[in-house]
Length: 597
Image (tube, rainbow, N blue to C red; front, top):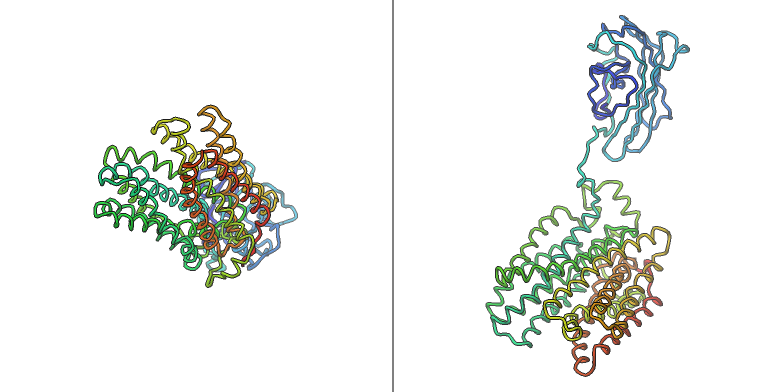
């Protein structure tokens, strides 16, 4: 049954069988029944030669609701065998305002009396339900009829006495069935693209930790030079944390994140060339790579603050950050294979070239805000805007106001405390496995993958738990404090148990559980930037992540100093102390309410 585009007085083209339900577009020719599916086509028209052999029919239309907008009247007629139709009554047919979502019902009755409406008997019932939202008009017909024979199936049309009798429905379109990927929520397309960007981010970052071994042999680098090369990445990474947040909040996350991925991908591809030119060129290229990756987190945070409502914030951020963890897994797993088969430069060429594929998708699928996306559906746009996602542009950054807020400093301090323990575990874990647990280097490398996998899994679990609690009515402040307390106290507890375990297997289990509970921070402090200041989410993440990177740099260096004079228990005690300080600061000063407009 076609309801879109045009309503006219053209002839009935098919008949409906008794006792069946038919939907739009079905071929109903050569069936038995009383009235064509295209009943709306005949208002005021006439039926000429062809007839129904056993009965004469009268038609009565009744609208179940009052009119909503435009209306017009047409003569509805009775007809019988071999005769023209005579007027029975005038009935207004009201067309819907197609911009609203409404339900209309029309009932059709058949009678053996062609003249008297009082003798009409219900012989068939039609129920028509129309629904419209946006640009798609869907229709469904529920039909029930009595058996009747049809002498002929050909029905000729005659011109209407009232002209063409055609009316165009407002924005009425024939329903179209979209593919599943076209119906996939656009906001989650943005999330998946950010996930892919962070996957590439850590793949390109960790490949140097594997490739540095054959590179140092080829270029005769000593340990001090290797350490200098590894640290040069953080020169650029620290430089663009805050700048990346400012650029993202002012220019839009799409532009800044796209620039970051292209920049660090080019730096990755050019790394083998820079290494052969000389050490200074390699140091500059690694710093350039840090510049590109430094803008990624602030730009991503800006994008999600515009696209993701509060009820989906935790799990969307958890999914994106799990891309970093899985990127480390992929990089650590494939780098040795590529190096063994194709040489160390292949790692940089293959990983860096993947950025071009991502960038092509980013250009065509991503938009900085929902307002910029011309293909975004009305329902999804309303969901995003009603979910308190920020889309307002930023002209100036109110630094004095931002730095005067206690929850902002709670973010900065907590991020420092969190990253101290995290970077220590991730940086020194292979050494701990080798020196304390007596694993060989191969076993240590394989076990290094375990915490990343654990973090990826538990980050998403924590995200779903946090969003579920928010949907059930628990305040955002309470949810953030619960999740971050788990992210602090969980690692603190499992690190204290390391001094009591007696088997390597239990030690590995404690380390994995420590990192798994640490991942709940993605639903705590890492989600809080968008809570307290969605318009300045990029700047806020840039501020706190600068403190986090500094914690990694200082913590890694301090651990080496502590191990020269003490033991691993001393290293873990410092991390536990900072975890406890972070827990106190977070629970006293943090909030989940918006404090920056």
